[in-house]
Image (tube, rainbow, N blue to C red):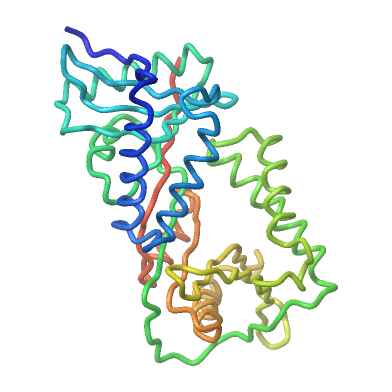
Length: 314
């Protein structure tokens, strides 16, 4: 019999939710993206947000993946303009190559039925079954969450001066940062340019409601011989009950690139984190930014979660 995707029986929803909750917690803890109760709280908030009406939620569909009389697993889907998103793909056991092929064909067909030209898949670095499903099928890494833990000891004198950003510098920084982030969102394929601009503005407003005075946000300018060479934005968060830093933006002035200042600002972020009591730093990078990825990995950052995107041919 052919592989089929059928709506999950509503009577199974509570059991599915419980299993999926445990899976989400385990994936984030195993990857190191979240630890302890942070992973539990994140999974609960995630499920509550995306499934507010339980099995009756209209914005999600949960399908049973069946091959003959056997259930291979489940797939949780949601759609947005132009994109079919796989929120979670769970296999009860390793599927065969032919079963992966059949599932891929079924999901692509479903995307086309929804007039979507992109298929999005999240991937925890410890989720080998999902990785096996997407490999060799034309997916590209759209974005990466990375982590540096613990902070290394660097025997190196700073080559740049990093100081708190002046209030009068903030408006031009905010406009440039918001614009650049919107362009990267659009280039990643996750948003249209118009939607990317809306999302970028939403995030900027949410993260920095009080500009340079926003509590828990540290904005800096980097200078060499009195000339600005870049900006650094570090958010102060909590991870496993301990202080944690997150690099929200780092930018070297275009005229100052290829001089090692990007690396120097990353090292400055480590000093900021350590001064604030943190022993870990996280960041997000778009998959197309190969230069930045190489820099971060060279400094010891590791991937904890990725998002992959497939552009579906006509």
